[in-house]
Length: 135
Image (tube, rainbow, N blue to C red; front, side, top):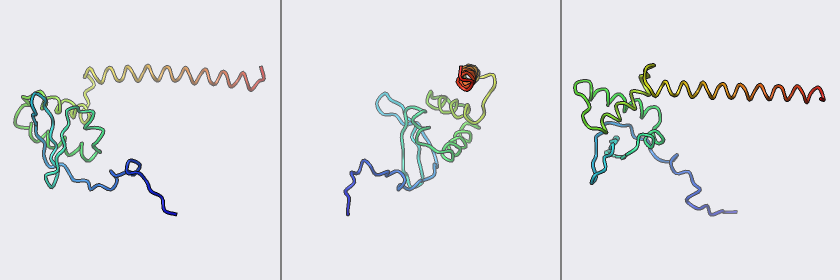
């Protein structure tokens, strides 16, 4: 029996060809600024928010972009806000600094989560013991 499947239910991304990143630039449209990612074959993607870029990129893409950004800023300083933002975000991913405020907050948050999850485990163990003994 043949079944018609709506296009929305087909995972199309798996069928697409992956092109490596070869360059990046800052792209402006009206007052908005974007990162334009250029791939082999002149395939381009634009991102305004770094988190959106992270959602679409795999590890190879991030490593290649970090290499390109380091290469560009090895001889010059980032002057544009978008350039600085990209530099800072990628640097935080690839070269974490223990004195960085963001890392300190993340460690503190993880410590709190760990303590609360330890307390939950302790409560579960106590409740299991009570129910096992039949009391």
